[in-house]
Image 1 (cartoon, one colour):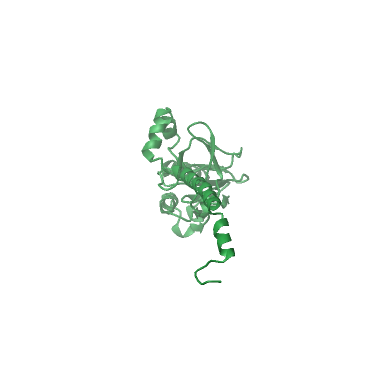
Image 2 (cartoon, helix red, strand yellow):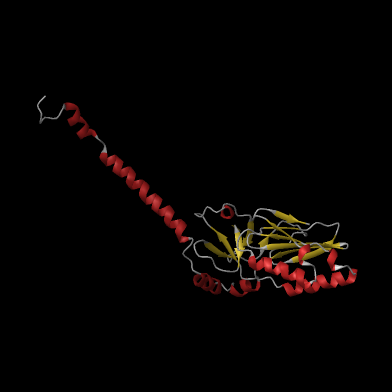
Length: 238
């Protein structure tokens, strides 16, 4: 075989490599990937002002504000543990049920923010919602969950038990007033009360300070308060 000549096999493969088919396959895959990526990113493009404008346009803004003005957060891309599940169900502005990973009052860039309305909870009269509290008899059970940036305060006194789910914006004055009335009625020594403070793992300082403020306002000794860190998925009960 001459030095400059190509073999029959080389000529054959040059003619029969199916380059057009490979390019065509590549063409089909790339637009599909880009479309999916575009769809995910579009979830995050609504700014807070755009969401507010949409609420006002649909005449739902006042109702949303009256219910606390909460955003439900979800993400299809972030891999943090708390975004891998969506345990909380709410109605959105179109009265559709949406599942979210967490709720907060402040708009959060980088994830999808859904203005949420009433929460859908299985009928459990002893479940304490975020920002709320309950006082029941000792023979009843109180529970709460979803303590990410929130804090739960559990207190047992006399024949009563108390549980609150505190967030950064919870008004503690009503809680303190209600607890004071119960404590005065049973005439208990505050030094014999041992609260348990269950606090979330991230950015918990605002809600944790509220729990400590409630205890100090009730003249419960600081050393009586036990703190425990819990995750978003832990149930807290008393």
